[in-house]
Image (cartoon, rainbow, N blue to C red):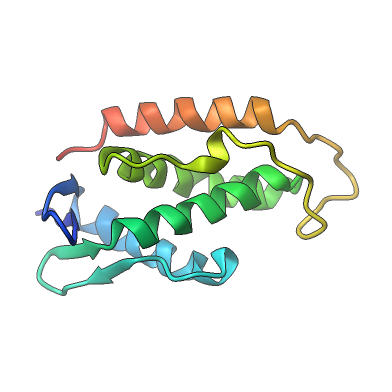
Length: 141
């Protein structure tokens, strides 16, 4: 069985993962909403389908990518690192871009690690872009 993530405006399928994967992705999206500090734009229609307000979702993903790139916190990056590639791929499939993947990023004063000083947003932007491309190749429509 599978479930659909569909663009709410066009009904275009953005992703058709297995049911458990879809449910986990949606729950992770809900859990990350406070971190993004904006609505996620995905609604569970409860019949094997999720409606994606792609404008809101693209803004949500951009906020998470910005937080990811602005932080040097290894654990935060590890937790977000599993979610962001398929999220970026869904935004890409909608024809939108994630601005933070090409923007200049300044270091955040939140969620920082005092033990690590790794801060290289341009390198991490390239890694996220490649990870999203790899994820997209394995995401059924």
